[in-house]
Image 1: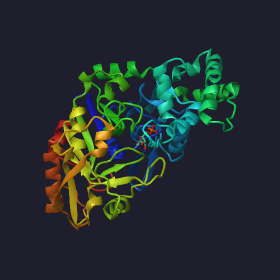
Image 2 (image 1 turned 90 degrees about the horizontal axis):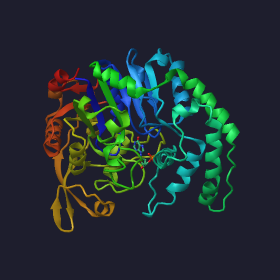
Image 3 (image 1 turned 135 degrees about the horizontal axis):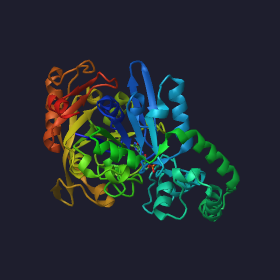
Image 4 (image 1 turned 30 degrees about the vertical axis):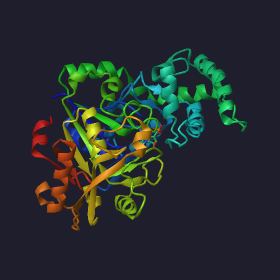
Length: 437
Ligand code: IMP
C-alpha cells in the first residue's frame, strides 16, 4: 500500500493540513505536488500552533521525508523563512527531512507585480481575488517556457544571463500593465545575487525528487500525497476562471509528483461540514446573511494566508459529489463538524435548479453555475459541544444523522470525522484504520 492521497473537495481550507499531519507518521514520504505559498495549513501539536504556506505539513514529523515535488511553484524566500521559523521553534532534522525538486519552478520578483496587475483585468468582469503570491504568473511562464527558471537553474553558470534576458523581456510588459503608473526598474544583477544566496541556503534540500520517489515507491515505501487548495479551484476542472493555476483536484497528483497512478491506493476527499470560499467566483450555497456570519464566527473563517474573511455557506453536495468522482475518491473526511454545534437547522444542497430543470450535474461553465438555484433539504441541528467526542458513536443523534446524509448524497463512506483543531479531536472509522499503512 504505497500511496494515500489527501485532497480537498471544495474551495480549499478544508483542514487538510491537520489530516496530513495526523497520517504522516504512518508514511515514509509526504509529498506536496502543486500550488505554492498560496496554501495555508494550520497544524496544532499539543499547545503549539504552526502555520505553514509552502512547506508540507509533514515537516513537523521527524524521520519522515517531506517532499516539494516538481509541480509546485516555489518562492525561495518563503521556504527559507518557514524553515527558519521551524528551526527557531525547535523542529529538528529539517536538512535531512525536507527535499525540494530541482524541477520545481521559481517565483521571481516580476511574478508578484504581474499577479497584482492581472487580477484587476479579468475578462469576466469580476476579480479572481488571488492571494497575490505570484502563483498564476509563475505557472504561466512555466507553460510558456521561454521566461522561466527552475530550482535546478539557480545553480547553473548561465543564471545571470537568463535573468538579464527575462528582465529585458518583462520590463515593457510590466510598464504596459501598469497603465501609465510608475514601474520600478528590475535590477538583474541584484536579483541574481539574491537568488544565488537563496539557492545556497536551500542547497541541502534540493535533489531529483522524481528519482527519489520512484525508487521509494518501487521499494514499497509508503507515500502520502498532500493536496493544496481544493478541487473546485482546479485550473482545468474547477470553476474556471475563478480558480488557481494548478491541478488542485485529484488529477494533479501524478503530473505534479512525477509518480504514476499505479502507486495511488486510497484517496481521502476532505470536506468541511459546510462550505467556504475566499476570493471571487460563483458559490451557489453562499449565505451572505446571519447564517453565514454564524458559520464565520464559530469557524473563525478568516484566511490563513491573507486573513481575508471567508465567504460562508451550506454544504453543497452537488459540488462535492462532482469533485469526489473526479478525484477517484474512496472515502470522505468530514472536518469542522463542531462548528455546526448550536446551528438550529442545517441545510444541505442536494441538487440544483437550472433553467427550470432539476439537476445533480455540476455545470462546466461559470455562467451556468452563477444561475443555478440550490435546492436544499434541512436537518435539525444539535446544541451539545462535541469537541470532546472521541468516537463517532458518542456524537449526538442529529450529528450522526447529518454525517449519514452527507455520505448518502456524496455516495461515499465517511472515514474520518474531525471535531476540533487538535490531533486527538479526530475519529477514524475502523475500516480506514485497517486500510491505511
Ligand atoms: P491564486 O492561487 O493566488 O492564484 O488565487 C486564485 C484563487 O484561489 C483565489 O480565489 C484564491 O483566494 C484561491 N486560493 C488560492 N489558494 C487557496 C487556498 O489555499 N485556500 C483557499 N483558497 C485559495
